[in-house]
Image (cartoon, rainbow, N blue to C red; front, side, top):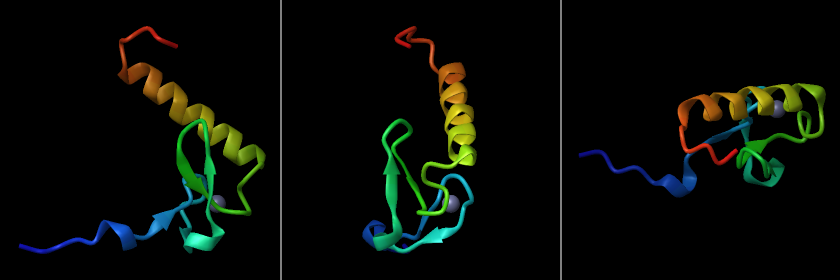
Length: 65
Ligand SMILES: [Zn+2]
C-alpha cells in the first residue's frame, strides 16, 4: 500500500493553480486555501474566492450563511 506523506504534499495556489513553496504561501482566510504572492490581493483572487464560496453555499443546506 503506498504511503503518502501529507506534510510534504505540493500545495497549489487556488487562483492560478501554480505549485507553491511553503515560504511563498499566504492563506486566504475566507476560503482557507493557499494563495501565491502574485494572486494575493488581486481581482482574480476575489473572483475565485467568490466562486468557491458560492459553490460551497450551493452544497450546504445548513442555512448558516
Ligand atoms: Zn496564484
